[in-house]
Length: 161
Image (cartoon, rainbow, N blue to C red; front, side, top):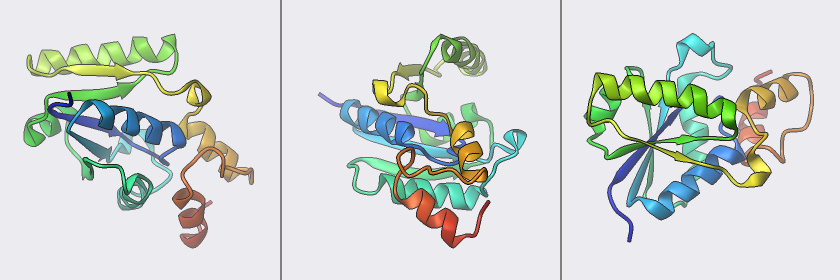
């Protein structure tokens, strides 16, 4: 039985097949999954917030119960605003867990109702990280097998390098 609404935040710079995999997994568990594209100015994004949001919408189209939004506030504030039950975070390796645990505990300190659910991606995506995709793309490498079809198509259209 599926229940509740989950928020899956991230910069998605760009969205990868690993992100899509986690959204599909979350959509099997929750009635609604809100993919929240963060401004992420502290990460010096490769793509604009609007471009990242558009890519997420196009890449996740057709997955039932999934909505894509953007946000520019603290995650805990977006959590409250959207009235969600939990936040979804992906874990690829032990190193991810340490960082994600710290963030989850800080958010819970800011709001005792803040809950985090950790999901593991399929084994084929354990190594996949947006930073690696950006680096490969910027150095002229092929990213088609790493990202949804919309990503290389739009990057070419937008003349992004």
